[in-house]
Image 1 (spheres, rainbow over the protein chains, first blue to last red):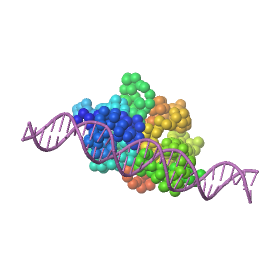
Image 2 (image 1 turned 60 degrees about the horizontal axis):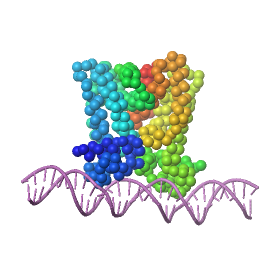
Image 3 (image 1 turned 120 degrees about the vertical axis):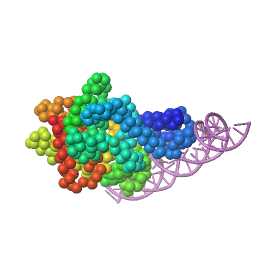
Image 4 (image 1 turned 45 degrees about the vertical axis):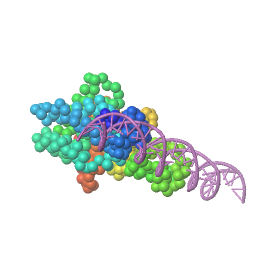
Length: 186
Length: 186
DNA sequence: ACATTTGTAGAGTGACTAGTCAATTTATAC
DNA sequence: GTATAAATTGACTAGTCACTCTACAAATGT
């Protein structure tokens, strides 16, 4: 449905600008070009809308992460591709990426079931386990590795967003930061 | 003042549990054991209270970071001491550390003046510049280094908070993660 | 054509909240 | 001991917000 999407899009931008509670549902509806009641037709509560927005956004990020990955490549190249994809997506969807962080450090995050969190992280953890088995990645706890990589990406994204970099300069930062990360974990 | 502190303490715990806007000032006052009006006697608005809580908390963290640092030590040892201090403080003040992250990824963060942010980061940036000059730390942009180190610490803290580690095991994780970080930037 | 479901609208409601205010208590100064 | 200032109280208000409800429109199926 078009309006359902419009509502999510409007909510995303308003949440990022004003925060969850400082954004009334009435404003979201207005921004989305629908009536107040329509919003509650698609989402029973404001909380449900917020959760749906998170799941939806996170899903799109994950899908993009694994796009263009060539299975034929070495583990390092595959990893680099996923790394680059992630940062590219974050740079091209700044509001979405910021929203994910905002959500993750909010009490709403507790409403995401442990299953969903595990399921979401599983492919990444499996990939890291594979790397360890192949003796390409240091034999550290995968949870630790995962968290470190995640944080690293958040950091690079913050850095890239702090200034206006030209496209080649940005590519250079991504390349070099990947080398730093790879040196650290391999 | 005792009550001023009590209000901040109550606000911290409630904000971390319920979020900024889902925490009414009336609840903060109640939790702090003061009347509604008293809260507004010390803080003109709720926003002012939130900002004050952030500045106060961040200040205490920064102070702790540089405690026990022996100027006689090598740059690496000094850096390790600051690193360890930070993670220790974060582990001993989980609510406070979580609050800082929560605040930093919220629209409230925009209310902190660039000056205050710069002033807060300056000693750390100077320290990194020193390390680069001494050819101990890789000659990367200091902003990039700073963000990467910050993110790394946030990540390790997340990992340590995700499970219950025994004290020696925790120390081991901190030691090893420091080596990872140090390898990356030196 | 008709019936039934689904989508859309927007005024209305009850609950809640940030901040005020006038009154009272406590501390401070001389 | 009195006067002045500062701290504290809690009832009150004006406004806001999540969500409901009824009415109507559009689609869908038969």
